[in-house]
Length: 263
Image (cartoon, rainbow, N blue to C red; front, side, top):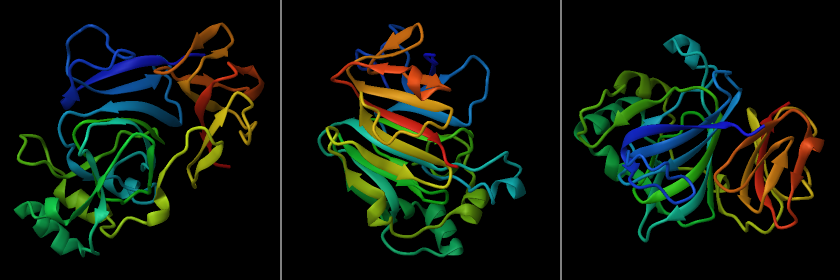
């Protein structure tokens, strides 16, 4: 089935959205979530659209979350679909920062300069383990695949009047340089395994669905071409959910991201 779009307004969102997503409302949309009308699925696919930097933030792991009163942790990945010239993403810090030093840097604002801001372009891919200190910069559109928990601790927010979660952030953050093998530039024409993590797997593939697991369920995110699952058809800007690999029918020119839970 085709999952329903859920538009989320954000102070850092874009107005208007790219044509494939614009709902004509004129709202400043930062995120589009794909869900099943109230059913909580184990993975969540989002599109993000930024006109300003997101907060410097961190997510707990499944092991850390219960002690903080959260239902679960969050690991995530990003596939950049568009980026303005000079756009950057902050992932990790230039050096290891102990918890108390991280707290002091967040209070002083020095944390912004301690982040590793990497230039990005369409096709860049990042896999973020729980505990990674991160921030998405302005002028970026990307696809995010994550564990389906809405748990974010803001460490620093550039003076915006929003709640910070300083104590929680410091408890769960692993402030250190970002591993080089968790960032790459993707040749979209090449089938490849993008994530083989403890929580989910993500495959980039074409109509042949090479190396896609027959484990159910599957999330299908078209990047080009068309996809049909049952009575539902769509393309770029849509997200599908299916419990049967053999129900996926894609056009010969299709390229798509397919995600499933790790065994």
